[in-house]
Image (cartoon, rainbow, N blue to C red; front, side, top):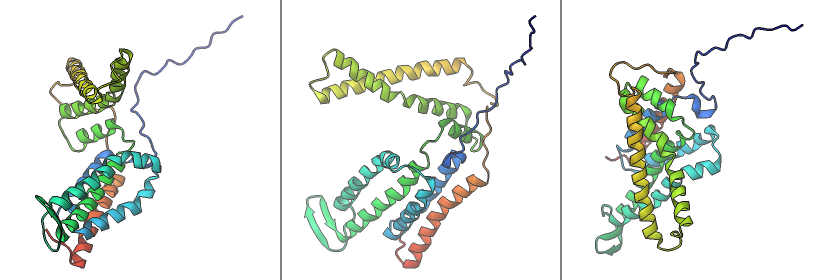
Length: 268
């Protein structure tokens, strides 16, 4: 004798995705965006060394709280670390000349004023670039899009287009590797590196444009560009954690300004 047991019918009602609860991911990315903008505004008001040094020191003191591996941190911030010395050299050679002159050749000159300006610029680039990269490590682009649309009230068409573009950017590396392997299989990858790189870059551009056109048509056919009010799968909230992050970042900028004014190095 066999008995049949009835299984409960599966629920097809979709549940909103659960956001990761690790580290900085529990905070809405819009808070990091607003905080970094506020910090940058505070730091561009003056070109002195003290304000940038204080801001960078406070950021480095708070950096261990994020628990980011050193290897990941160095890899993600490598573009900024490379750009900083290049910026300093260019400012030192072509910045405003003042004080004692150390070197002069044509348009290039190195003076006390240009060296101070170069150091201030390097510290300022680090102070703005470090949180701009670190706070977005591991960020979910969908969370950022939700925040831009629901919190900042940006147009849904713009937000969805930007989200699709960010998602497609992750494919560029794979496309580049596939192009390189295809050229190597045809025996075209051993000579002429500059010419090969230029042709691959053009091929990658054509491939990206074709994919973007196809994606735009597909999104339009699915109603992503339709007018009217749009609903969102998961709500974006701006609560105490988000306000705390904005306050910390803007507070770093205000403290750096206060110290600079107190020391007497503040200058616009």
